[in-house]
Image 1 (tube, rainbow, N blue to C red):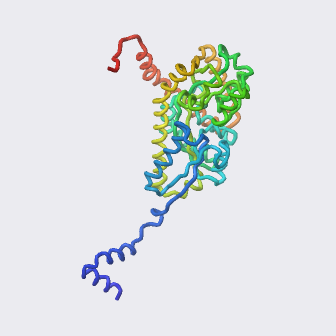
Image 2 (spheres, rainbow, N blue to C red):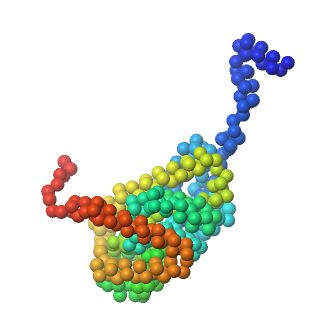
Length: 371
Ligand code: CA
């Protein structure tokens, strides 16, 4: 009876009504209509250049690519929990997502500091190649699963600067007694050289330098350091960034929340992170030199480089410190050894390609100039 009336209505031209009946017979899968609303806290001040804005870009890309099906509200450091408790908040379910740097979690899982970057380790392109083609993503997922989270590389600073000092550094001896803000493995190396090393979230560094609670601090590089105004508190700006040749930023997601996502949204989160990873690095490359020129020309900052003797001493210490840490923790050993093998191949190719090219580019010849 009912079917006959449908056929009849179709036959009489009541197409809209008929279509509605047909649609209700084949409802869309419920999962495709579900909207997920997540909260992400970062370890960065809200909208901090490059880092905080990278996290905002991630949320925006995920929202737009999913047509609003996955919406992520972004909070700056301290808005929900203190910066360094962000991982606990994601692990515990207060937040679904966080954005920071892997070495901030070394007291929870020591192997995270090897994922962040290794002193004298790899450059940004090598680091990304390791994640995509060297088994790095899988290893990092294994490390982050210890904290109940899924890992994505979500930005890279490129080579950093060693930081801000109130005195000149002529030898490894000059690290002795220095109260120095330096996180991760680089901090362990400076401690082995005799420094008193502290880790502070970014927002707490300027007041600590200004009050004299610390003598020296590194943050990232000119673009970010200018934004924090470190030049007001220290005169000497040292390179190179042996301690952080290419620091990875992490996007970590509660595994419970991650596993509730349908596959297409998982791929969107992955693709958005891939885009942010490359965008953040590009922004640092694009903006660092302008900022450095401002620091030198407008703020009278004295830019210095460590001498080779000091760098060689730090390289030796880095090897000892990392071997010691890896011998105490199987997961650190697994990550470090994997990176060491990848780094060896990367260095061999780099010597013939980028390093040889950089040398060629720096030779004394007359080049084209912009008109
Ligand atoms: Ca740093």
